[in-house]
Amino acid sequence: MVKQYGQLYQDTRRALLETENAQDAGVLARMLICHVSGKDHARFLADRDLYAGEDIVEGVEKGLKRLLAGEPIAYILGQWEFYGLPMIVSPKVLIPRDDTCAVAELAIKQALFLDKDPRILDLCCGSGCIGLAVASRVKDAKVTLADVSLDALAVAKENTALNKLTGRVRCVQADALKPAFPFLGKFDLIVSNPPYITGQEMLELPVSVKDYEPHLALYGGEDGLDFYRAIAQNFAPALKPGGYLCFEFGMGQGDDVCQILTENGYTILDRTRDYNSRERAVLAQYGRKEV
Image (cartoon, rainbow, N blue to C red):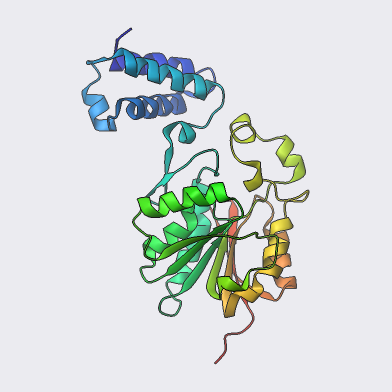
């Protein structure tokens, strides 16, 4: 049946109140209707009294069922924004989150002070959101996006093209748990948001994460620190003398991650918080730069 857009919004919002608070239910309902109808927010508001066709009503109802089952809105939309950039997302990659802006900002700030044409590696890149954010802000940076998952790399390649950065960004397969391949060369800066969920936390994840997002990108070993140990050791040879390593980490992991870095010859330069005032990222330097 056809419905006015305003009524379709109210019906969708009311249904979402089963699982969401009032504000989130309204936002999700609007996002879903705009996606299915192809309208932006302003046009949706202007067309509230117009009738949506049966195909649009049916599309919204299908999307609503997916939301009520716990599927993240980002996967339903197929695209999400990170650091002002559009990002294609699918269950092959984690959904970029605002928390990760902290490590992106830390990496960008350091990259802006590197020598001309710096080489930067985004390790465990997933969608490529961090490396592409760096490339978009540091105009002379040469960025490599690396992940063990070929499915994730396919998404990263799409996002590189979507943001018109193919001239300065390449995608390669690399396993962060193994020694860095020599063909990667040397980097001025490595940035990584590796898997850091502990074994216990994996059992307690919300349905929207546990049932939909890739476990390969979540599980960081029983204590959540396997990737930090491996990267600090295995990718030190991939850094230029005096090169930098920038990590995102989970809540409460800051001291442990910094200890791992220190034990592997890094000097801690900065620890920073995300938008929710939780400590989220660290910048460290390896060795000394040759004079």
